[in-house]
Structure formats: C-alpha cells, structure tokens
Length: 232
Image 1 (spheres, rainbow, N blue to C red):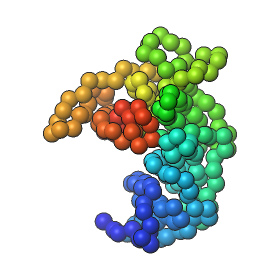
Image 2: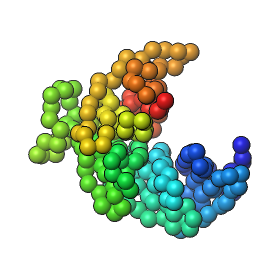
Image 3: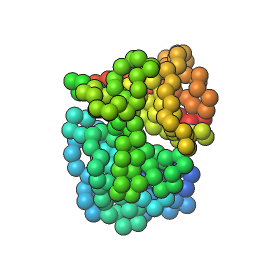
C-alpha cells in the first residue's frame, strides 16, 4: 500500500482498478500505478457542496459524477495525464453512478436520483458530448406501469448505485433493481429479501451480485433506502 499525497486536501473521490488507483481532491489528483505515483493539478477546481462522487476510470480519462443533493450535480471528465477538466453537457441532477454501457463501446451509463420534496430520477447515456435519456419511470409500485410514457410525470423513480457485473449493469432504483444488458430493454426486479449477518443487512439472492443495505444515499436524497451493489 502507498500513501497518496494530496498536499493535505480532503479526498473527494477514489477510483480503484486492476491497473491503477486514482485519488481526487478539489484541485488535484494522484495516480498510483506500478509502484509509482504522480500528481496532476486540475485545470479547474471542483466546486460546490460535493456530498458524493461516482468515479469511472476509462484508462485515459476519469469520469466523475458529482452529487450535490438538492443543489444538483453533473458529470466531469478529467484527463488523467494533463488534469484538464471538462463537463459533459446536458447532464443535470445528482449523478449517483457511472459505468460502461453494455454493447456500446465508448459510451457510459449514468444514474440520476434525488428525493427532495418529491422523487425524481432517470438513467442516461453519454457518448462523448452526446447525451440521451435511456429510461425513466413514473414513481409507482405498479409493476405493469409502462416505461417512457409520452409525458414526463411529476414524480419519477430515483436511481442510485450502479455496478458492472458479468451479465451487464445493475442499478439500484428507489423501487427495486434494474438490469441493463446488450441489445435488451432495461428489466426490473423486485428488491430481494435481506438477512442480517453480524449486524449488517445483506442479500446474495441475485446471482453474481451482493447487496448491502446502508444509509449512504441519505447524504444525497431523503429516500436513502437503496442498497450498495457489489459484483461477485
């Protein structure tokens, strides 16, 4: 293990892959790979009341989803060689998860979710500067309710954690789990039952996935009930 030197600044995000570890503060990032580390200053400091971040390392760029609670958020691109920061346009709202889109090389999926007076959220696709909505659903417990109704409802399902598994992407929504696989529509699954192990609520009911119930989403949303998702 190494001590990553951010010059005393607080860590805002931490990305870990098999190739490297990246720690990000408001004004710099430290990249650790192969036993070596280097520090890169950010061209534009990260601002705002950052309450949660969602990093995704493409190998050359760190995509950083910012969740600022009721103050919104966005998706930043950070060149890990130069430190140049640019914002992916057209993405508003707290970004709670970022991951690779199945079957679409070079594209990512981002989850947007917030409960502040009323629930709102969507799943979006970003391919470079091109952003489009992949999915949203009216906030209801009716399983037969159609996705993408012609008129955007006042309340929509918020989306939180996202993880890449062997069969695609899994998303934690405010009403259950959602799966994204290549060339298939987004599918919905009722939240499975949890069991308590050493005081922690976990579930291994979904093959290839571990669910851990926490209150981490309470920092960005009054809902706060979506679990962490861990591929296994």
